[in-house]
Image (cartoon, one colour):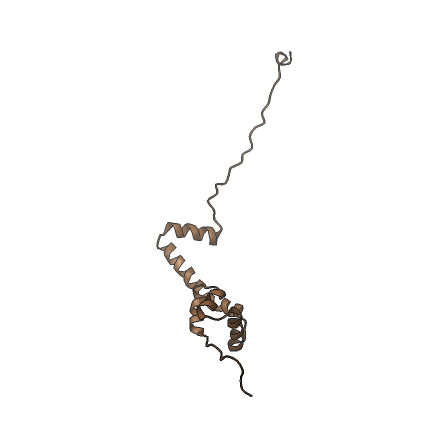
Length: 117
């Protein structure tokens, strides 16, 4: 029995992996490859045994690690903006000034008889 229908368009998985590493979305990748997202997902299942979402998580992690590494390099080279950004986002630091609340002595108001007349 022969296959009926169009031949399958080849998927350049090396290109897909590069696009994932620079955080392109699945829709962007399918557009670049000129295939429908469902086709990309189906071919991912056929070729790798996983859906595209799972493939993407693994393939995009290398790009995230590279970006994180570069941010640390820039911060540790003395870039104040990156140091502040990493401090806020990684260490939970903030710009907000903490108000120092102090107990004040009670205020005593004395009424004199002149004040009640």
